[in-house]
Amino acid sequence: MRLLVTLLVGLSAAATPAVAQPQKREKPAGAVEIDLAKLVRTKRAAPQRDPFGPRSFAPPAPAANPKVIAGHQPAPAPQKPAVPPLPFAYLGKVTQGSHTEVYILRGEELIAVAPGQNIDAQYRVEAVTETAIRFTYLPLKAEQTLAVPEAGA
Image: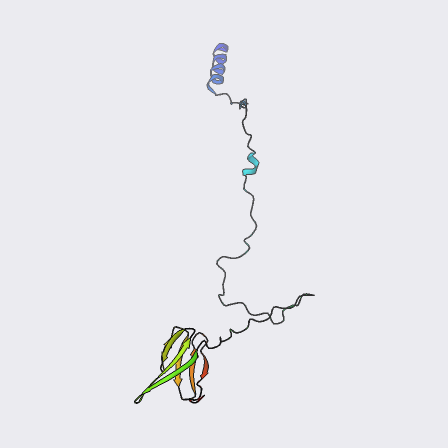
């Protein structure tokens, strides 16, 4: 019976697998060692902004009292664009019956003008009188007047 117990104990020890011990492998020459501790995720802090929070698309309110830094002056406000001088010169007019044509020069270009006529996309002739031609500078909607010299001058 003792023999039977010894055999059974020997068989049970052989039946249970032995716990495998990890074997250390030799590293090949030129192998790079990876620090696995760097791959661990760190816990993040709370987000800086709430992506689902309320938002306003209104422009920011202007500062009431801008601080003046010692030695620096605040930038001057941008100036309104100035209306350029009229590029036209009065040349003359031709009257045939009740119809009168007025001619002006822009550089070397001769232009016949009438009220309501647009000259390029910059000027519109508003009125033609005996003493003046009124233009509107369209980009700034500013009126300008070109004096018509007297007939004997």
